[in-house]
Image (cartoon, rainbow, N blue to C red; front, side, top):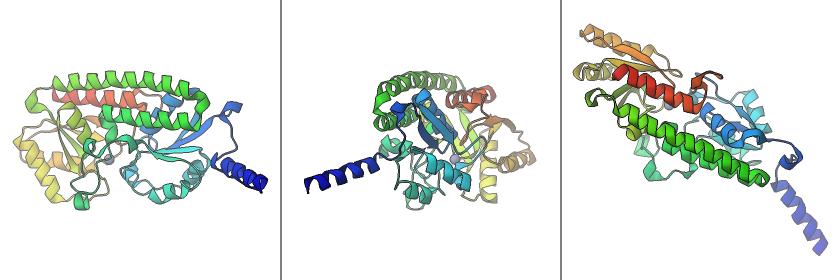
Length: 306
Ligand SMILES: [Zn+2]
């Protein structure tokens, strides 16, 4: 009787351990992440002990993203799945639920408290939050801590290395945060207005002291109409705004109609450059990393508005 119970307990435990792979035996933890920013953070923290697969490449809009058959395989093969959460990956909820039955599926936003988040005013009932947390570098540091703790728990043999890697990465993020604050503050106060295609920069604006206005709401699924275009056009004219910004993962058509409208009223607005909002740049370029992407955005904004 005792023996039977014991063997049952052991087999249950083995089941909980998940996969047959053993990181101590030289195998790497297989991680699948949704956005490039998350995949980058996992690579930084996991180093040589993880194999990272990112689902959403350059130019991909996570709000509208649907998992392909190939993605399902990548999620299936993973030991751990990381996603942003706060409904950024709005169309992937069902597949995450499915995957949760067999492995940890972890939202990197999970350490953030309600009071740290921006409420999405366009959401019904004010129930949901702005998911673009990576643009406040301080908030994104908490995402790195979620990744660090999850990897250490899943692979305790390398917990010390994950801790050390995270520490080094967090230090670079601290420096980037200070850089962004200092650079944005150098823009004259009355020019410190950031106009973009969709409202991805709310946390950026709050953290670094710049007013933010997007044509489309926080979610690119929301529709915008001629009223939004004319309101934003009037805002540009009234405030004498010289530059607006396009985003790598959002069509430029919407923002161009605003520029055209302002021109008809005799106010010239130029495109200040391309910002990386919901996706990073190409691998191998500066913007292909999280740190480089934020730095590129800061430098592009400062150059056009200063
Ligand atoms: Zn977005």
